[in-house]
Image (cartoon, chains in turn yellow, brown):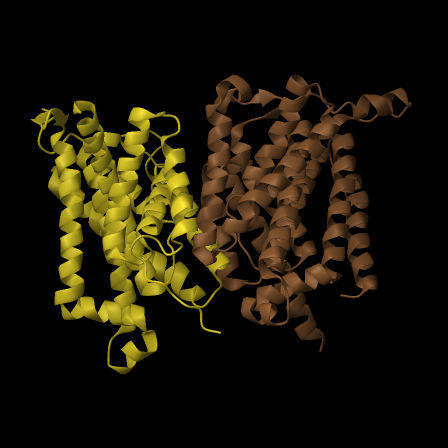
Length: 290
Length: 318
């Protein structure tokens, strides 16, 4: 029982990171119908920039803010320079563009920063908290709390604010949104900035636990993508649930079956979900127009 | 495409293959050329899946991995000749593609992408985790094909590089010939029809799931044979051959050159294989340049290099 609780805690921590990546995916997918394979690089940038500005002597909160801001700028640049010019291109081209962009960002990071692994100090100490017969690191609570906070924030933004509703309108029908006076170009910029900022935040929160290096992005992008799929592409609730579920699956597999194959099980679960419910858990059924 | 144009395409490639060695400054370039041909072979397979049938796969390196490890494992564990191991690998790849193809190919777009991606990652994970059998991430050695010593006994002495350059060139030409024939066949026309519109293809009586499955299995066999040849010519193999980045490279080569055309795909394979060789001087910037090329080509030449160039030339000619 104690072991189970322990696995659940570690699963929720990892799952929260996947959920943040998946939420970032969801925002960009909703706004532009693009699956952004460079999403994992935002997490990497968030972690790396924080580490380097922090080591340069800035206080941690300021370093984190700078990292999130710079990463948002990278997100906006990605949209302006790579996604916007290829509007209307087939899915294969868009996949290659975002994968190309992710390789580019990784290559740039390895030149600007370095190829070492880095870590940050935990925000509130390393004293484990005893809870329900298991222990959890305070930093894990930061990660889980961060994911929940971002989710609630996004929910309120999209349902309670005019700007949020304008983003949804743009996602739903770009032309119609333009006709009612929405600045759709700005909404796209905003979506990419927001998505990159969330990715960077995930990087800041998780670096004290898992370390950061220039090449952590690929695995995170794949997991986050898988999580978004699991929950149903384009659905923020699905992204959160998919991320947490994926983290739990991995942790339980690592604990009870084989730690080598924990990532395999994640992909097996995803394949199974795709076969049984091709739209994911929360996705809506779509019919194709002829 | 008429029958004559098919032979013109094949002759052009064969002529280039024959003439190129005269410009090689050293024997090393035979190795590079052999690598280009192997990559081109798997990319021609992808042209059938992506270019003809309009599907996508981000996990085809998985089949290359199966072909490669078949050549590494079957000779030592089953006592098979490496040449037979190539066939065994192709058979296993085809069977696996048949098995997973039906449920996977119901999916579309990004969902199909992630499902194939998941398959590829599973294969590479098995290859790197089953250390007892595959040697894990460190890889394992692959026995010699034995064909070169056979030639030597017949009095024909050629270097390893020359041998693989020649063999891979022949295999690639056969692969291209099959792909071009397929393009004109009823099956090929059905593939192109469902690429245009699945619903329309269905209404004229095309068995859409079946045709998709055929394209998937054929391209899997191409990837598997290419993986086998790669393993045999290097004499060594690591699970990276089945990795996600290899799958991405394959799709990029296909799309870079022009996924609708076999010739273009060969060109794409050549460029992306040569690029790292050229960039070794700036090894630091290799990823940066590769990423940049992928983005720029997709934005400015969305149909790929060769079709865009041809379109431009034709436009000027008229």
